[in-house]
Each structure stands twice: as structure tokens, then as C-alpha cells.
Amino acid sequence: MLTITRKLEFDAGHRIPDHKSQCRNLHGHRYTLEITLTGAVIETEGSSDQGMIMDFSDVKALAKQHLVDVWDHAFLVYEKDHGVRDFLATLPGHKTVVIDQIPTVENLARTAFNILKAAYQDRYGTGLRLHKVVLHETPNCWAEISGDD
Image 1 (tube, one colour):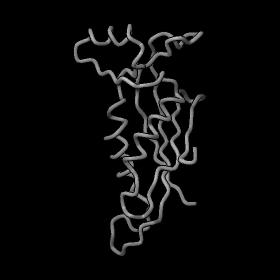
Image 2 (cartoon, rainbow, N blue to C red):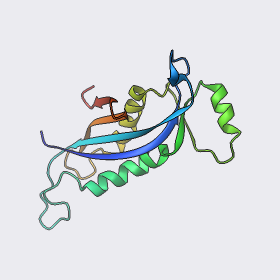
Image 3 (cartoon, one colour):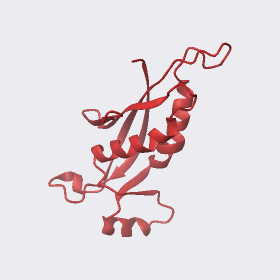
Image 4 (cartoon, rainbow, N blue to C red):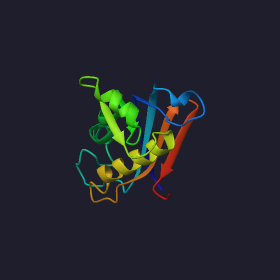
């Protein structure tokens, strides 16, 4: 199987409400997102994308539109974390993204995968599909999810 991978970075805040350690506090991370796609190589003679699964600039543009620009410099808050949601609502113009799960790196990776899966699904009629998402919360800690999961 031939794959391509594009890496992007964004900054976001979160907290793990019932965590036994420091992660229960409001804090942020420099996240690194790796998007791996698979599909047939485009063979259309004279096409700008000939010889590619997908142009890396298009991979980036779709990821930014559907996920990175939405999450970048936002606070990712669990919908049931009412105290923090209420507090963030008092900050004029604050960028808050409410998610339906506790924002652990595992849950964020799964959410990112689901968002991006639809964005890339067979855009060229070449069987293009999202194969894997890796989300680094720190350089030493990450979660990954593949389409086979």
C-alpha cells in the first residue's frame, strides 16, 4: 500500500476534569497532527497532480479548513465541563470549541479522524481515503488511529 503523510501543527488549550494530576488544570499544548492518506496514484496525462496520490498543498488546505483552523488557538472543552464552559463564556470573543468527549489526546485523535475522514473521502475518484491520524500532544506523547480501527 502506498501512502502519503502531511504534518501540521496547532496550539490549543484543554483540561481533563477529573485527572489525578496537573492535567485537571487549564493548560495548553503545541499539537502536531500527522495525516496519512492512501489511494491510487493519479495517472491523468497532463494533470497537475499526475504521479501523486494527492498534492500536499491540497492535503494541507483541507486539513486547515476542516480541523486545524477550527482548533488552533482555541480551548477544547468537554461539553459536560460546565464550570469551565461558563467561565469561557464570560471572555468576550474567546475561541472555544465544545466537544462531546473529555479532550484527552486519544479522544481528540478519534474526533480529528472522524472530521478528516469525510474531508478526504475519494475526492478524485481514485479511492482516496484517510488511512491514519497521529496526534502528538507533546513530543513524547501521542495517540494514533487508523481506518482499520
